[in-house]
Image (tube, rainbow, N blue to C red):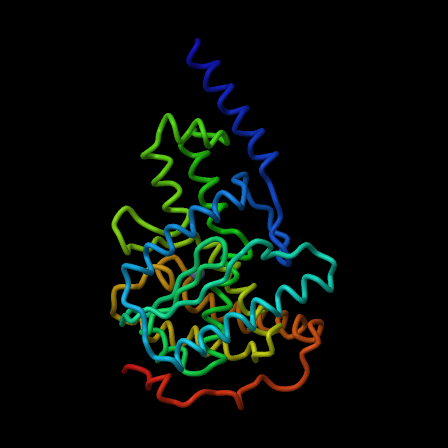
Length: 294
Ligand SMILES: [Zn+2]
């Protein structure tokens, strides 16, 4: 009896949390569960990111670093400017963007809450061009923009019955809560293990990422080629976590890009005042993008 009423209260409390903690993702309008304050997620994310970066071998190639930073900053600026013109709030308020290049053959990249992004050198042969890189980084910035980390943390807390009282959760179940936080940043229990986002979040990051690269003046059609090369690169290999494991099936993804996301992104490029072709003339020396691995 007691148990029943207890679980009823839990269920009701859960429902309240769901109702109160619902927010809406900009541009896509998707309702998401997110009751953890962004400031809280961000401050802990910053620590985790700097630890991960300090444990990684960073690329010392000045050209590659400069290019990754330029593409990242350009996209962030375009999204912020677009949001301003729509009199939205600054979607990146309080974020300190960082774009690092990790020397590692994995075909991968990741983003943590608060604007912490890293690209692995192994993705460069797949990116092949500045626009291809913009598709990758746009996708990562989209995860940050849509607060996918906070959403994952909120879902995890609720699923484990830890509710919204984070301070209580941290006291009662420190280990459990901590591991949920780690998963919000995409980190597994082992150092350097990155966890995938959900399929819904991945599809949303594809959609927003394509819009974002277009807002920054890159041709969104280039995203199609990028994800085709990504699919080819993954053939017969263990799939790297962020990029392929929970991503929508490649055929579905490419079709969605071609039929929905690219045309939509072209509209946003127009609204953002981007005219003319993408800045392909700014392609860096080919040495930064080694030929695709066969
Ligand atoms: Zn992703």
